[in-house]
Length: 457
Image (cartoon, rainbow, N blue to C red):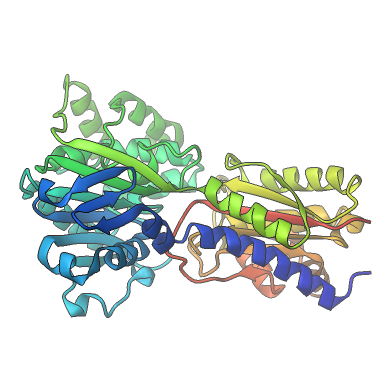
């Protein structure tokens, strides 16, 4: 029987591998790798701009990695260039904001666009997005616009079209999420209701050139979906947007949204961007998983990387992990690390009063339930599931652990994983069993990383 010290050592190994993945996609680190100011040349990702090729650098954007991206950019550009040729505005969550920076009248204003743990549009976000649009609308053709985008950007860059209130847009966003819509479906609808999404920022811009640097939080890294693609001319299909709403909301679609989608559906075209737009992904889940591979090898583990396309219901991923652990566990002669990247969902349909939690906590709890059926595996298994942004649902946790310690504590308190799963209350179960993963904001976001470690019999 595995003792407590060994359980904690194994949990720490899982955490070390998970943290290695998050460190690799640290937003400052990614910007440092992709921005250089060298003599008379500004290098932004794959693009190079002579300093006499543009007048000012206008920096805008939004996302959970925004503060880190701005800090990394400032470090690379230096104070002289910043003070003379840079201005900007970037929206971030309140708990990602360095409150002292704006008091110092920095060239780039970092704005708290929503409260911590509330991944929904807020009036503060609308005000911040208005400032961003004004900056690009008033840009000189000779200016260069740099857009910094990362996960969470959709909620942090709200700009409802004039015909729709923030309240109606918020209702739609909240209900689509609650009823299990995918991020692709959610962002497809958002693009049709926004001034900035779906290429709206690019269409508003008067500068000749836009360079967008992106940390992806979406499976497959589709440019039109990340932060709802403010600089990507995306497919425009109001009828399909309405069909998504009908699929999940049925008769509860706000009237203003139905009328608006019908109206733009009758229009033949929309304005095109006159800018030269370059979009480049600088950080992704795949990059993080590669770093996890290296960390696992250093700790003496073999590894199986299942990739960044794990999605669907959280409890189904948990079942998949246990199946693979049982299969692999019979073959191994040395410790094995199973890596899963992607982003699951938790459907709250049929639950009138759901509990507290997030998709990663739900994965951990569902794994605990599965481990109860396989005690021999539980004795040599540990799992960590966490959001790389440090947020998991509307909670202060990034995710959770599933191991023998959680099982033992739950048994002592007579807690039933099935009961907590039924009401989607993973947070309180894991909190009671010392199974929550808490990191605070990481200033980055490339979806989720789940790690299962298995030791030989």
